Length: 326
Image (tube, rainbow, N blue to C red; front, side):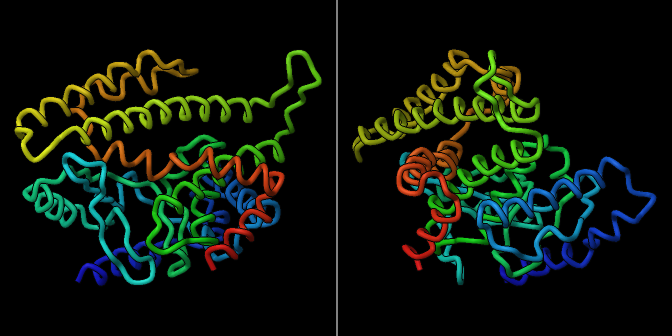
């Protein structure tokens, strides 16, 4: 039943998505939207030609969300272990998240897992890859992103459609993150000009500088929470079957609170984006910390491998990974 529901939800979007050429020729569509659609075509071409990503029919259609979310993803984790709850699906194998096009079904499943004692989170996602099963459309919500972030998103999802290892979510997401981020930098330099370190100060095109600063902020943010993840993991390993539930809960909340409050020691280019993020929210739980493991923990290692073994050549690195994982 779940698979049928997801298929119907996906097909509703596919059926109601308009071909890009049709949107570009529609006088009723805002010019700013058309400019972003043409920009995505540039990103796609660069990703295929320069990064070695797989050509596909993805992002050749446009779906207007009318300001409403279309997909929610549920994650869950053990309450006192940094261990994700996992679901098993055909083809993609075991994964630590489950998508819902019907939010009420997502809420129902979240309540079931809550009742079983898991930490849970049900959140909106702005993009996803169907790994070639459907023609992934451009969603109108994507277009609110900056140029660098939009390029990163498109390249990230194209990476999934190029190489996806069943039952290895952390590898897949870290790989897509590193290809998306590094690929976005290369694309921005291709479009707006390269960094010239010979000048004093070095010349950096504005679009490139904006994205690099955004990326530096995000990298600082993820490092902070990856360190926090390690601290939580160490705490949980001190718990035994004899540790009272209340004591475990108090220690967990205290440590998470300290990790959040110490965020103000991190330097950001745009501190307002990060420092007030938890001001009016309840403390995050284990699903929050596992998200950084899922998307960011392996990036430095992958970047190092690509640089040292393949001189930063994306095509050679992807070919190596395809051969390695068959």
